Amino acid sequence: MIEFIDVAAARLELLRIAPERGAPTIVFLHEGLGSVAGWRDFPRTVCDRLGAPGLVYSRRGYGRSTALDGPRAADYLHREAWDVLPALLAALGIEPPFLVGHSDGGSIALLYAARHDPLAIAVMAPHVFVEDVTIDGIRQARAAWQQGRLKDAVARLHDDPDGAFFGWNDGWLEPAFRFWNIEAELPRIRCPVLAIQGYDDQYGTMEQLDRIARAVPHAQLMKLEACGHAPQRDQSEVVARAIETLYEAVKATQ
Image 1 (tube, helix red, strand yellow):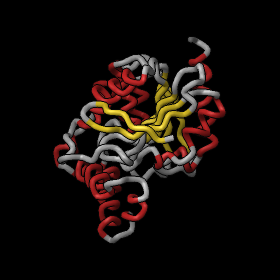
Image 2: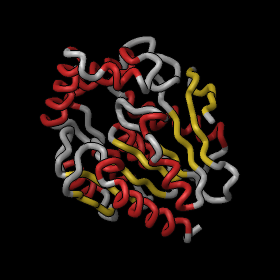
Image 3: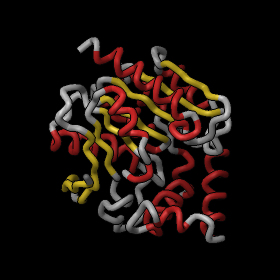
Image 4: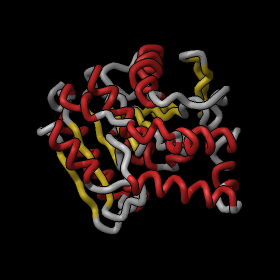
């Protein structure tokens, strides 16, 4: 059942999966145009297979959460990782979390782990720096929006589809964001890391994972064939098993 919570001056949409289960909570962090609904059934499938509780939420400007009231700042992913997520977890009594992040959510998981101590993180198609292919993909998404090919799909996931789309698209296309880079934070990560990416990802290359590996030598990489920007959809079973293996391993150490 969908709930709402007031955190960091916003009303956030959230879905709690079996919170009564006595195990570490898996927290799912969505992509740049994602939301609670955008995950589809992936979080519940993973949680049910592991007998784990889960938390899925929509960040501000997405889903049914509070709409944006202005442009996103260039450091908005840092603020989500260092301000909003810790406040949300504290309000819900979740500690330590097991984070699963996709795309922007993967970047948030990495930034959170650089300053906090999660049980582990699994990141899919994360961004640690801005590539030309990323900007090209975002420009193509803008063209598709202007041609009317995205709005219906976005509107199914967000109360404010224009705000959700342009909050994401304008942010990434802002000239200053071209220099966004979180590599300096990565060596601070001490928890187990699973980093997953598809070879057919239209928003990033394997250089994203390779830079994570250089900065976080203990990170486990999974590079997938026949997989685009959404590994949890394109290779759902393989990805679910990998996340489950990591969860079981770190749970055994608690």
